[in-house]
Length: 477
Image (cartoon, rainbow, N blue to C red; front, side, top):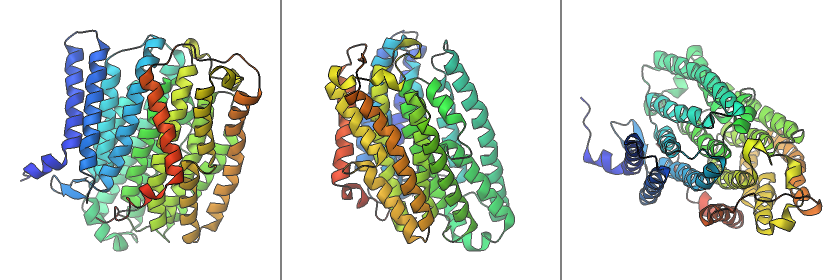
């Protein structure tokens, strides 16, 4: 008999508050009041309240609900990433959707429930909770990708994402079934205690391999990345920002929870497989990004490359890799959501103003916005003193210490390649003539959100220890 204790509910307050705000917004929509601003503020209040409660819950991790979920510690840290991504996405979306004439209250409800799924993924101590979290997040994202249902590209994006997502879910469930069949449990803590014996079982390793396939799809790692460019391009730009930050961070949080905190993979075949996927992602992502003329597609392939960088830390499986991934996720969230936020300001109806050439001369007309975009491009390229530099430094250092120097070399070389297409945008903004401009006046809240992201990118680049020291000890369960 499972008994729900008061402590379970108290420690899970951030998740419960967020879910309640989503339900309230959903009820407001069902009441027939065609006022999306109600859902906007309800969702905003719910996310901010959950963010505050998560800060208060940032101490040591505590298993709750019969050791099915972990609250506090590692889970709370990841929740801060998801909630920050959701908060910035909600703020940026209002003006964007109004301009695109798709402002609907259900948009914010889907963002909130997708975030709740992400929080379940990071907190999971059982593979069944992993499945529930992934499906809750994914179903919301499938709808969000096709939210602008009159757009052909949006419909194509939603359909591709749904079909390939369902395919990945099959791998996830089959992998869980094999792991359960060989270990007799789906509880990750119990599995970790007998991992040494289980690692010699071929069926168990096949099950782990299927989990890698499912998680690799969610993080858009090569060769499971083909959906990302089309979905990123077709989805509403603020949804793309949310998917490329919150959803990717959630998938990595689960990847780390299973293959770093639970499974002892260094020196095993699983580590070698992850290293090869990381190398392929870095090479394919960066090389293909060079040929892109659409800024959203460039950032999509850039996202694939960054997946490879972060996978290097997982493949290493050491303390430096663990801390490096968690730092990288925060840095990547703010620099990517800031870049997509600016793209959403420039973009106009019918997918206009999304080409590189549309940014020519941008600094002359919008100098402040050009500076913000330059900060994000420099950070994504890994140029000091921005946060992106230290994110790459930590994961490459982890690879070297794990005797994977070849992987670190590939990372450094492909990072040099990425400088070309990131700085190409900066050169167009500052050294080419054009008529690029923000079509409509951007609300103060949206400008503040992107400015805050830029400030954090700079601050974390100067003081990376603010996060690195916080993450020490998060990997003990």
